[in-house]
Image: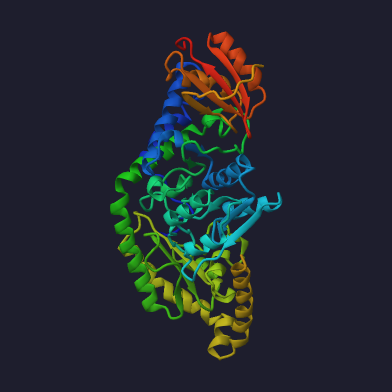
Length: 414
Length: 85
């Protein structure tokens, strides 16, 4: 019988029994609407506000600085659009990094239609945004800078504290998408000095359909969803009480184990990385080698397609991903991998393992055992790989180089 | 409408971008934190508040001091004259 080794926790992760247990009553006997003025409604309201405190506690915010959303993507939309629409006179320029999640990138691009100037800052080969680049690009017209705390495709952690300081020096708001980071590494909004921070429930062991945006006290935000006065008049719609309660419990549980779990996950990740790098030739470890998420191991396998490798691994019961779950079905080369300068032909071989505490050293060893064979099998039928082995890959490489140099120039121009 | 200028409030409640009818709920809550005689400044970009807040003051027995048109919002001033029920 095949064993199952699930290492795609960035895409989806189970809620713990404790989280499921606190959610259940709010799906059934405690179904009440938190806005109702009678005592039953107050019970639901209390549960929502307790969860708000639990989420705030995980990131060192105050409860009134948290607005619940339906996802990390919604939190990112609310941050970008909410700030830009609430401060129309502040400036018409938005700066984001080139490796942001689509919910930030596409929110920023939306403002190009409204005649805002949107700047996409390039990153280095490890995916790190050099603060000097922001210093060069920012001006008094900039209303918002948004740079993620950690990248879900390559695991790199960005120097957000320094970037936030630069934004503030120029009077701009600073938002960080911390969906991949909160619940995985310690995050303190006051230490970081950010004005806004997005997180998602699934990122920290909470249920799907939940997320939250931290906004520093006094920050004006235009709502995305107009209607009633839920969430302090910042997001209309009856609250997802079971989801919010689950998110709160997950935040509380994760806070208690955050530091020790990060150490354990980093050790497991290093075991996986060392094992695969030693056994598979022409394997590239993407992202920053040290400044990265603890349970995150991302690679590009030369000469093959990542989708095929993920498919083959799944036949062995090993579940990984090719990149961000949202974009992996588009069969496009990841913009993140392009931004770190990888040629398309190599970026197509992307495979990402995201571990959590349920993974074991034994499971890691199983992946190390099965992975090389899967790669060999695919390379044996890969025209790209075989052409390279025959010494005929130069022309294709040159074409990639020209294309990527052109992309680099586009980024440099900002 | 009574227009005023140069009022120095004891506290400010920013309701800009926040949805109706919060302007009828939050001032009362915030006034609870003020002492009698102190002035609350309410910032809002909602036109309806220009009628609603003076009416709310009359109904609740608080004093509507007046309003000032700011650059990006209205500033309405309420003096607390009695404890909020």
